Length: 389
Image (tube, rainbow, N blue to C red; front, side, top):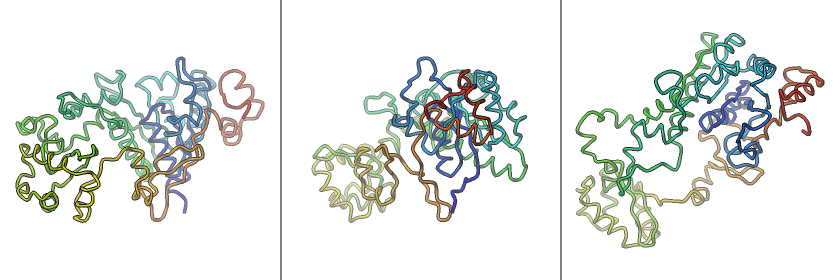
């Protein structure tokens, strides 16, 4: 069976993680994703990011095609309009106003293609006091209150090793909105503009904290010491005798009781949420090695897992059995689409393209431009990636 989005075309004008990951997952689902990028890297840009072997480019651009078009040139804008006429979805990641200066804002492209789903992913949205501010993941997490509630034992807000606001607040909402808009188009025949703000998305991750935000209960939790942030013995991370760590997630009484029995400390059963018991529990776990604890706890079927490095996670037996991660022809690992479809499986992705790799293929083979016109446009700096391909 064909992937679920086979037959749909997506134009990728994103240039950072949130939008590029959105379009790559649409490509994994079968959409024909065309990455539109400039013939030359921006001033001060990293040229190496334009080659597929670069890990960053490879990680976010698999299963896409690349066309190099200078959108600052009127003829380049005309080419984008022709591409937009053939597209179902466009994803862009610029600050508000940039796409209008490139002649590619929603109002302009809606006139070209009224069925176009136009998704704008930005830090603060298309309107509001912060709309034109620059920002990155840590800025959105800070403003959303998430960094304040991610304090370590040193009392300082700690940065996360993954981009929660970019992916959780940008990519995931964009994917849901795009798919919903495509469904709505089936009923209305009309496209629409989707305004995805990563600050909004980051705030959406506080769904369990928001009801407590203006009550004494949130303050009583203590920053970095709440139920899920290190204040409860039954839900915590513990060091073992050999310097490894175990994550204990025994929130349910039945699980915590089994953990305490394996620890040979039945007196701790009643202290699952008593933070004063933490030093005692830490001392118990430090008495034996990781393997000893795994041998004791695994037969009990409790939510206790070793803390793995990313390299160890890739080699985990369950991860390998699920084929959650694969390796491309350049030897780089990548995460496969994280959902298994019983009828319309996601595509096995091809490697990321070099910048402009498919310019001639798309402009000549699909838009019908004559070869001599393509050579003229390349000579004029309107397009790139043709010569030498």
